[in-house]
Length: 159
Image (cartoon, rainbow, N blue to C red; front, side, top):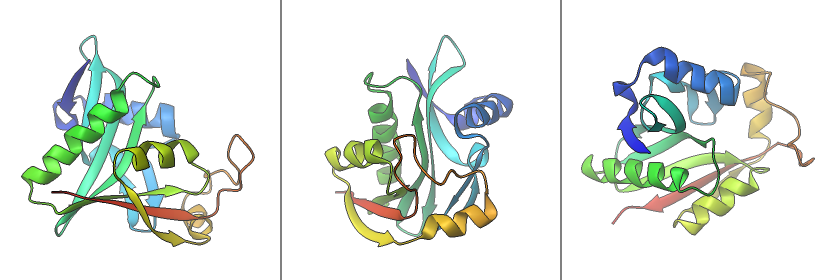
């Protein structure tokens, strides 16, 4: 596995990754509407250009916001490696914190980020209803039956 900037990959391959794993490259959260295939990021690749994980982010002032993180193989360190790379990049850009938004049902993400120093700092009740007005394909419940309603803001200060 190699970690490479997404700008080094064919845009069509990055776009296809988002279509295959997220339904589209569009991400709708409280902070905005993003085309993830156009954002800065890093990809974990195998065998040349086969993407096995991808993280995207933006810089706003002194904060880096992670917009997406996806690993297609669990428990192999792919997500951790991508997050580490993004945090290192944010430090190089003189960011003082990294933040992200996830939904209330995403217990896997909440576990993952909190183990790596992220803290829940805000909850946006019913924010996903607003996002569904823009992106109706967002499901109403998770695969384990949890209603998808709220967004949670997690932040990690960078030292």
